[in-house]
Image 1 (spheres, rainbow, N blue to C red):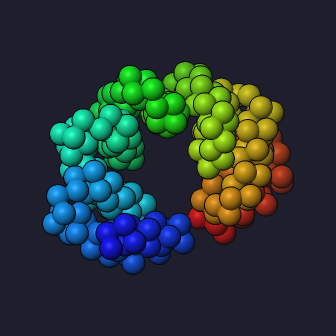
Image 2: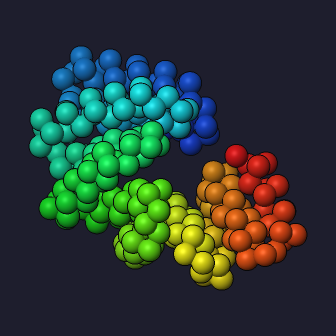
Length: 232
């Protein structure tokens, strides 16, 4: 029953139906706790954190992620712990607490490498890219994104690639490399379109609009601004 509820929750998240997803996960959480399934409990807490983050309830997300992180640490599940560390770091980045965000992302990266979890490593590198870019360290951010992309391509993780491509495009634009930025955002837009990911498409249009604007072509930027606003 808990697994079925978990699956239903994931389907609702994919459809951006966050309240029904939270309801399914909350029911699954009760069952996992009754069964003493701590891994299932940790995974469900993480998913509740994702919903909190996606709906802008960052303090709630942080609480769920921290609870999940504690369970992963107690059970010695390194992969889960690495990803939970990264999730906590993401919330701190959204809150503008970049030092704490970087500390968690770096811990996630170290643990991912110890666990030989290359996909978790790729996510941690993407998170570090996001943090450095927010801090203005766009050259280093670009290096993190490129390392992440190499791993994500090896895994065939197209959703992760779209995120990293958009991040790389933003970092390149910020360092004046507008032509290269166009290429990254265009590639992200194509991937996000294939995946039916409106958020990824919106970010790609946003990046293309910024790149056109920065390179002195406001008329070419305009349709991308409109597309971004329509999909956000």
